[in-house]
Image (cartoon, rainbow, N blue to C red; front, side, top):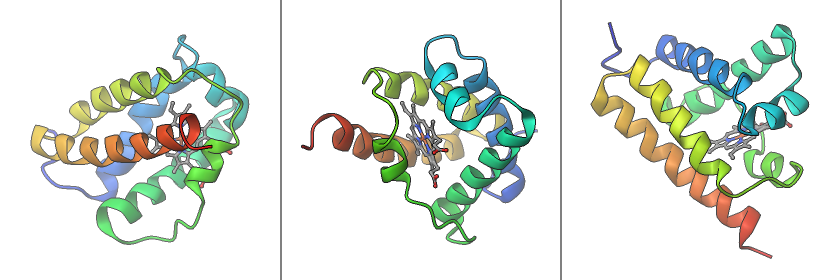
Length: 126
Ligand code: HEM
């Protein structure tokens, strides 16, 4: 059964599905993430827990995420702009596995808006 509302259980499942796709992605995302996050399951569990708390803050207005996402991305080694499209496709696929379509769409539009800001800051703001 897909989730018909946003809750932590769904967010955690989303993290599992999405980052399993990212970890094995052969189109550069895999390499970028594995070299930054690590390749062992412990490191990935920590990463997923951190990103889950980011989404908990975004979508539920709760939790204790206090990182600086923009800074984290500005500091990544250079990568192709098109990777934002790849990231969003994998995220969309994952959302559709976990959530009913109206919820998936709602979360996807938040992700698109954030991706657009990151992309602008990385590739256009000097
Ligand atoms: C091409 C697109 C993207 C790439 C290659 C990418 C890559 C990464 C990597 C490698 C990290 C780990 C950084 C570290 O541990 O220092 C990270 C962290 C993170 N990413 Fe992304 N990301 C992308 C897009 C996005 C988008 C669109 C979002 C949100 C909708 C997002 C949210 C985050 C957050 C919240 C963190 C944690 C930052 C922190 O507090 O340390 N990322 N990303």
